[in-house]
Amino acid sequence: MKRLWIASALLVFLLAVSLGNAWYSNSLTQSLAQPLREAQQLAHENQWEQARDLTRQSYDSWNDHHTYLHCVLRHSDTDQILRSFRSVMQYLDLEEMDQYAAANADLISQLELLSEMEQATLVNVL
Image (cartoon, rainbow, N blue to C red; front, side, top):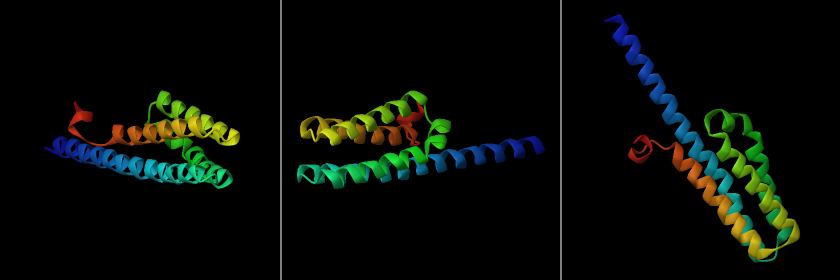
């Protein structure tokens, strides 16, 4: 009987950690995507410097969470987002609105998909 309680407690603990990770992943990706949305609006208004600052803040936040992200997510996904951040930064420096808007929208989508992958949904479990 003692083994059953230990196994049950372990399963409850793992479930709690999994749900906590899903919540944290969602809040992190939302906090990264929001400045990117604001930066895109600023770029449409030709406020490139402010758009660069917001994008740089989001990029710095991504790098601040580098260890966590590499521990809990697939490396190929995190590496792709890092490459996308660098592309977006380059298009901001060049002030290329068309390429920047496309790259930024792609980066935001990648962040949203990254969060979605971690959610405890039937689709992700199956």
